[in-house]
Image 1 (tube, rainbow, N blue to C red):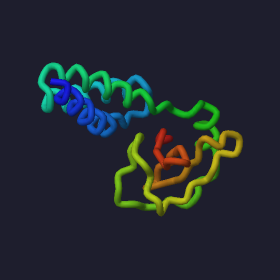
Image 2: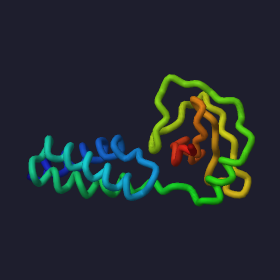
Image 3: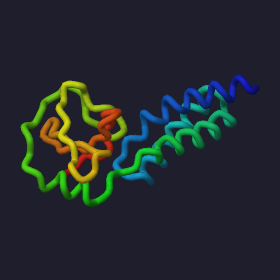
Image 4: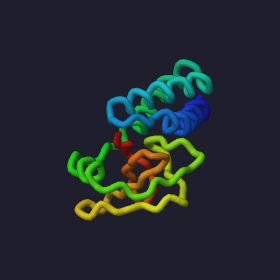
Length: 134
């Protein structure tokens, strides 16, 4: 039984992060919970669904959007040339290594780029997209 719960938790970790790509914390948490519960149910039945929902919700809510001043800064900057990549750019997923990131001067926790004609805010160490600016 213990092995089944651990297996469900691992599956939920993988599935939860795949579903947690919304731009705000609440939506990410909800998506993570739903994805984690679905993966957990497949692996461990009702107990797995419960474990998966908790783990997936934690993963989905872990990605917090940047502060408003960072979003405003990125939105107001002259757009660097857009890089076109095959991959779909999704919040919570890393940006391709070919994309050059421009640091946000007053907040080095963030950088930005224009990819597929979309401005994206990125956490530069992991290159994870934290927000797409429309």
